Structures are given as structure tokens and as C-alpha cells.
Image: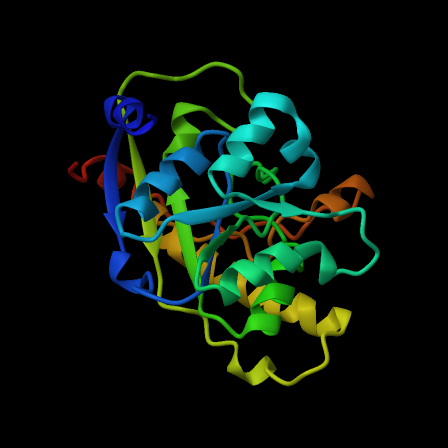
Length: 244
């Protein structure tokens, strides 16, 4: 139902589909910078032959029509009210072990970085990755945020935007296997995954990300991240010039 609308409003620059596993359970770890990007990213992955199962708050599955859609399309509830960090993601673990793809937004929400770079990630993706030892594919996307910027309410329809997606090879997390899932280990695994996503986005945008990713907790306490290095704009024109 959504594909025809996406094709009208978005051109496509999709790369890295060869890095999406043809079979077996895996995690797609994706940056999040627009309320529209779950639809556009789902379109990308659907075209690889692997249907993504997105994580969502468990409460959404109880809300009338929205809940019926979430259940009917096989989305995955996250039970945040549990005191056991891994139990909150039990449905995600089960889906991966059944051979499905679980699409994670490791940031947990739309980015709040002023330049829309990926923020510090939450550790849920690390918990599921270490528990299942499944491939974790880092994926960056850009373009939906130009059609509907983060936290905006109006679409910016013209000129027609391009949805850029770049999937990289699975992140090598083997050195963490067998370690106890302590907070330090989970944070380090999450940082490795987020760094891989950010490198893909740097390639799409043709510029360097800040040395330290945006941290909303640090911002709330008035401790601003280190100043970002000078950014090269060499990819800006090239990005809009790619074909459909």
C-alpha cells in the first residue's frame, strides 16, 4: 500500500544490498532521522527479499487499529516495564533465532543531533546481538529527513528528494562473545555498532561526523559534547546527482 506513495515522493540511491543475509536471523541496525524513514527503509529491505520486523513499545500493540496493524504485520513488542534488560527484548531474540530480520533503531528515537548525525546508542541492540551471536548489519539512510525533518509537521515536497541507503558488511563482534554482559561491555558493543553506522552515513553525506556523538543525557545536564571538526561539503552536490 505504501510503496506507490514512496515512489512518487522519493527517488532512490540504494546500495549495499549484497550485505543483507539471504537466509538466517540477523539484526539490521539503522539510524533514525525522520518519522517517514521506517516506511522508506522497509521498502529498501523488502526489495532485498528479507522482510524487516521493527521493534516498538509494547503499549502500541494494545491500541485499536494501530495495535491490529502492528500485530498483523509481525512487528515486535519491547516490554520496557520489565526489570530484566534482556527480557525486555525476548521477542526480538526469539525472532532472530527463528531466522527473521529484526530492524533496530539503536538510538531509540529520532536523532536530536543538530546536524542529524547518529546519537549515542542504547544497549538493547548489543544485548540481542551478544545473546544470539547473529550478524549485525550497519545501515545508514539519508533523505527522508529532507522530506520530513525530525520533529517537523510539514512535508518539504519540492524539489523531489532522494532516499539514500548504504548497508555495510556485518560488524565483527566476535571478540565480545563469551563475555559477561556487563554495562561496560554492552556500551562498548553499542559504540562499535554505532560507529559502523556513522561511517556509512559519512560516505553518503561526503563529510565527517563529530568526533563525539551527540548524547541527550549529557546535553540535559549542560555538558555539551566536544566541538565537531571542520566538515567537508564535497559530497553535498554529488548526493543529489545520483540516479533513481
